[in-house]
Length: 143
Image (cartoon, helix red, strand yellow):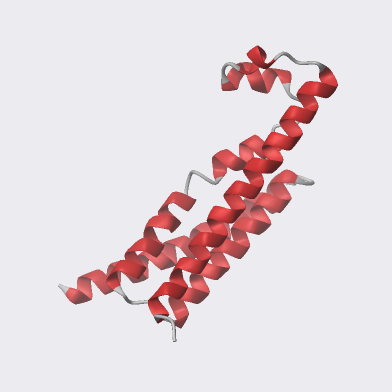
């Protein structure tokens, strides 16, 4: 039977997979647009010059989002795993966070309705805060 604490690493792997999927989508859409519109690669020397050239930056914007607050999710999961405190609540919160981030990415990359994206982002950040509050309780209880 696998170590129950390893199960907390599965949502982490799911977030890594989401990040690479968004990256591959970015590559596909960006190269496609560059070819279709015959944009020279040198026009992408900086983020500012690239955004001025592109019609659609949703994929790159979403990829940037995946390296903002989700970094705290990765750290939270590693702390939970290291402390060996994985339980049903931690697993549920972690998977809910992943589901919300997947939803955020889908909204961002497809129809990109800002309020829909905002609410999903806000709820996901609340879940992340709950994870960290609970980790804090675990740490202070152990002192």
